[in-house]
Length: 205
Image (cartoon, rainbow, N blue to C red):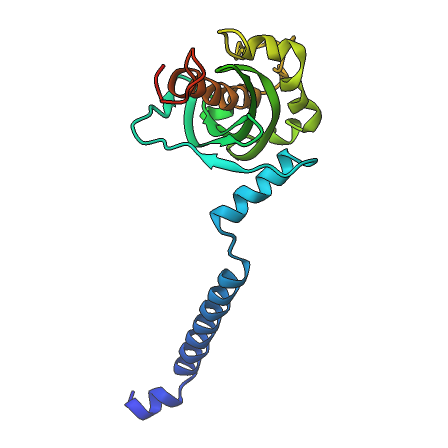
C-alpha cells in the first residue's frame, strides 16, 4: 500500500479518531482534576466540621518526628492538640475483614495529662471492609458511653475477640475489629508517645 493510499484508508481515519478521543479525554480529565481537587487542608477541615458540629475549634498539629506511630493495633497518620483541650488522632486499624483496615479520626477527652473518654469517632476510609456501612453513627456512639470512658481512662483497650457481642463488636463481621483497632492505635499513641504523668506533651511515655 502506498503512503497516500494509507492516509486515505479507513485504518488511518480510525487511528486519527481514536487519537483525537484520547487527547480530548486527557484534556477533560485534567480540567476536572483541577476543578474537583480537594487539598489535604480542606479534607481535614471537613472532618473537623463533622466532629465539632456545635463549635469552632482550632487545631495544632503534633510533630510526629521521633515518635513511634506504629503499634500493635495499627498506625497513626496525623495527630492534633485541639484548643478545647481534646486530642484528635487519625489512625488506621488493622486485622479487619480479610485482613483489611479501617481509618478513623478519634477525638479524645483529656484532663491533667490523662485520657478520660472519647468525644467522637469518624470513619474516613477502609480497605476491603464490605460491611463498613454497619459502622453507622449509632454504632460509633458506643465509643462515647460510660463503659467506653472506663476503658479509655484506664489501661485497657477495646476488645477484638472473635464472636464477642457484648461491646462494640457486631459478631457478624471483623470490620468492627479494624474499627476498634483504629481507636486503639490512636489511644496507644497518645498514652505512650504524647501524654505524660505530669500533663506535658513532650513525647515521653
